[in-house]
Length: 290
Image 1 (tube, rainbow, N blue to C red):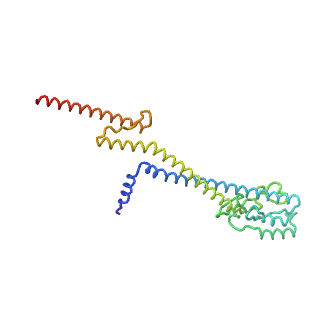
Image 2: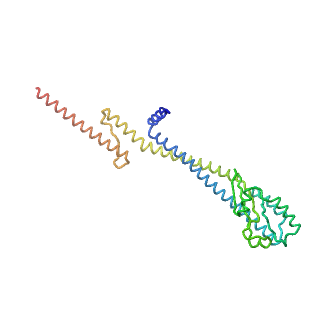
Image 3: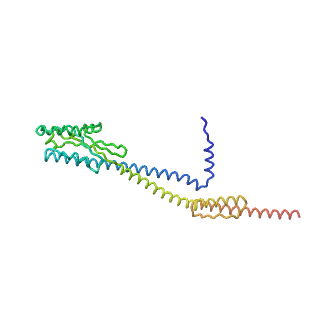
């Protein structure tokens, strides 16, 4: 395989022909833009993680409230309000909520024919629907997932000592679970807006910082370097009277200018001395010839 290096060589020649300040900009600006994108991306990832944690905490809180309500109903009245399950599905704070019932194992004294019929009807309506619900019922551990802008969490309701008054189960047995869906679209839009705002603020400050840096570079680096280049051209042309300003106590470029000026003075002095010697030799030569 033959590679074409000509474009790269031409690009290198173009870059070499640029001014020093332009080369600095070509190196710095891409880094600033890349760091801006990286900052926005990492910040967005962090906010996404926080959003998921808050959604899970909200789902857990709703599930705990529903569980306590169900337990209190059973302890106080030995039955659950028929309309309660319907009302909790219409909560405005969450996208949707559905109870998933396991085998309730009511004690025989509480299992009347009418109650058995109601439980059968509720089991048909609120039974396990998918593998995720089944896994939570069997394992007793909460599960959650995100699909687009919808967060789904399934929180198990485990039996405690109070539940054993009505249910013939061990502590920790999963009586039911709450399948909660929370819309994240509003939060996602806020995160995207914040990311966009952060990016443009970063770009604005970066442009300001680069502008200040370019001004300082041109004022204190490029200008002295150009003066040294001009002095080099003048001296190379034989103009040893071209003075270069330098400060021995300044930065490296200023000290370089001072050293260059010292060299110019020394060259001029040596040249003047050489001219004097040559003039003296010419005079003596003429005297000898006479």
